[in-house]
Image 1 (tube, rainbow, N blue to C red):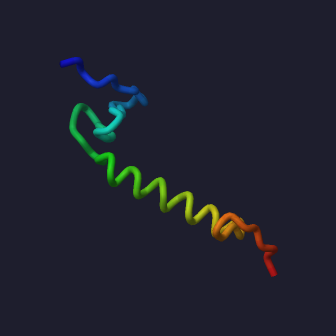
Image 2 (tube, rainbow, N blue to C red):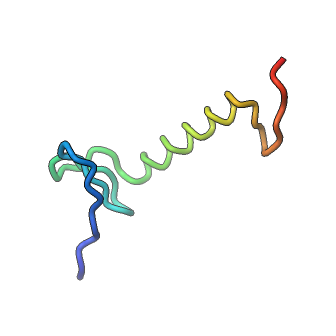
Image 3 (cartoon, helix red, strand yellow):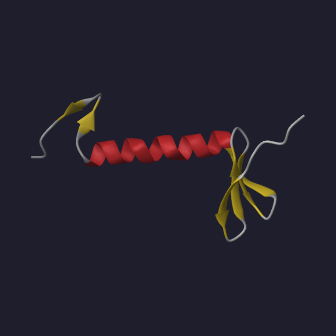
Length: 60
């Protein structure tokens, strides 16, 4: 079976799709946790810009 390609970020960090983030070939953030962090960041960004459910509201 072919090895999953890695995306190298430098300083020992790399990402393998469907697996997660590695540092020096040791898993540090699995894919599920990485997805949760990304989802949370998108949610916070949306709330800061007043975007709720796709609708924009003006800040009072």
